[in-house]
Image 1 (cartoon, rainbow, N blue to C red):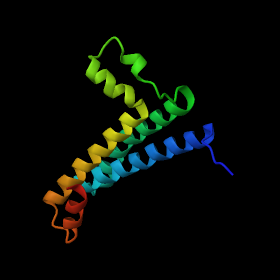
Image 2: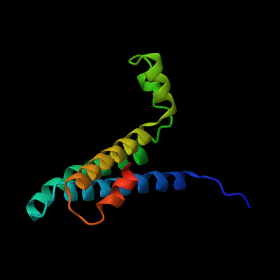
Image 3: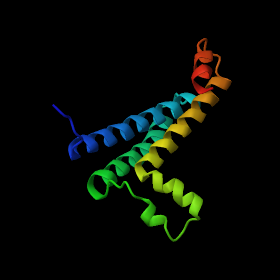
Length: 125
């Protein structure tokens, strides 16, 4: 029996990945900046949720593109063009959110006095 990727599995895979990254980004922002007031939490979460929701709608309803390089052909130099040719828009968004989380958690570990923050430094480093 051979299992193959079909459209629904690709859609669910990419949608769940960006949803998890978005939720994790919200948690890292709230934890890093020690947001304890409920009104402040309500102001931090909606922009990230709006971005994640619009990105999921974009990849599901408009275009799940694997070839973003066609858009950048006339704008970029050959080296950057080669890099973007390998990556797709969804991967660029996911990597950017992951790198943002990495820096946020590193900042939290640097200023926090949590007893287990050394474990985070092991992961970040």
